[in-house]
Length: 307
Image (cartoon, rainbow, N blue to C red; front, side, top):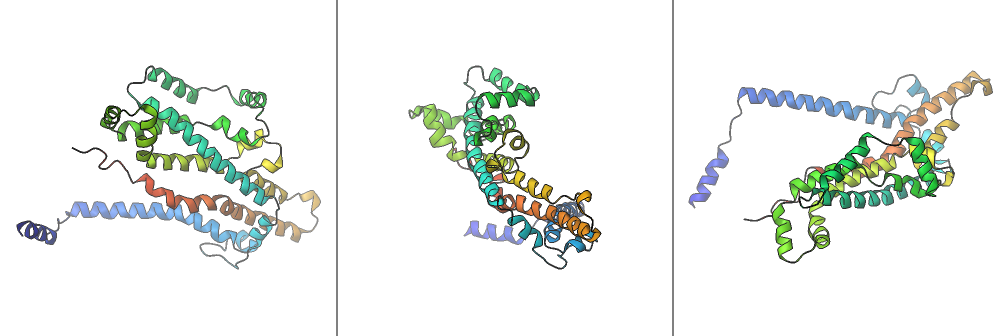
């Protein structure tokens, strides 16, 4: 009863904020609200413009809500038969590529996070050195060509199988979030390194795996430059290259147009396509992100070590 009485009395007495704290919170919330609106408004504008009439967009009449709603841009995009091929290819690159990336990153990061790994500082130096110095684009192209990866799906996966920056993030997570006591307890129970990695490290590393998966998946989904260099078969093009072809196909050539009205209409459609292409390209990532975002702030190490 005494404990309940104390808790009840504490719940009735709230700590009063000082005037300085209240002013700070007010300013802080105002700044955060401004940043939120600054980030949200371009997204809302692009979405509204993609559904608006081309003339209204060109005249600057679209401010927040769509004007004269029309799906003309999306109809034009999805009439392009290769758009579905591009989606399928991007999904393949994002799923398979992300799986390869995460596996390679964990296999490199976990050993380098162990204190008992012989020569770990030298190995880490080699990884970091590759971030600062590289052979360049032409040697990379020759290497991909000589390995027989050119114009194959693996040309967009194998050369980028490991990101050193993401590996360093994973190393930091393993060092700070996995207590040494867990390893010592597992070794006392007769657990070898592979069993410890599979049965203990991976289940406790869901947050960093989710973060790495998101980083790699977004990178593969937005893949453009390497696909442009290493792929010649259009059936292997990711979505970004397909969208580029759609935009180029609607580029105005003044020498081929004699009617000013036709030129203006095509110019308006081209501008409208830009907004619609942004939504088509970024839509899947925006839909998936809310399901992964919770892992950025949620840790699973609470209660992992007792006593």
